[in-house]
Image (tube, rainbow, N blue to C red):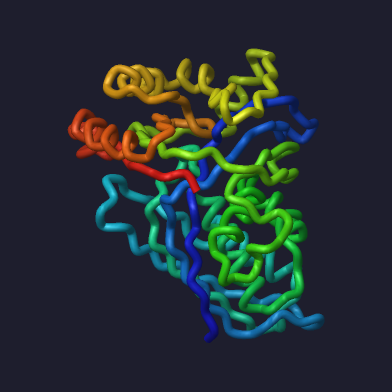
Length: 310
């Protein structure tokens, strides 16, 4: 079997605004997303190749090899409930691999799930890019984005970022490849842009937040907010999540009191809170203090990490 290894990078929302809602329930956003240097490792192996004939027969085997240094545990879905499985199946359906094609996936997981960091979406994007390389299909990122948007709203950006940050896959020169982009529509309309310098310290309280639930609460408030500038570092969903999960608000206030970041804000629908520093050294120093302050929570599953912006 032929195989490749891909780093699947986490993302943060430097800003997030909700500009509307479609009849099918999807929300329109305007968000500046940027990759950070925390990543999962995925090995993709395949037997067979893309072809113009035959049915689709694809088998997915997922091995979880959890990062032993992680403070959190992961409950990786199996089979069709796994977003990597769905990504591989979507690629197989689109590119019509010959009958008998087999795909094996091996995952080293570091990015927490249900955290606003695209932990599942970036894995799906990495699988898509790897299969495009292994099957040697002549395809642009725009086509993969079109496939990926039905898998998850963050998948399009993760395709762009992972393409840029894994140059050996052959997509780094694509016009959409970028580790920072303005994402509009439901997340599928990407405008690459220069990223923000600096670093962040991530703190994910030991809770899981449902994105559909938070958007549902946002709708009840009848608000729209078109924030787009990374300098704002404001998340329109933050007040909603804080109202539903007071621990997120407590975490924000604790970070403001512990260190002196330029900004403290939430990523995605939460619950991960980010302390942003323009200088990497300041973030590294703050990370030590934050880890110590949250030590008891970390022992119980709280996730505290330093991350550079890519």
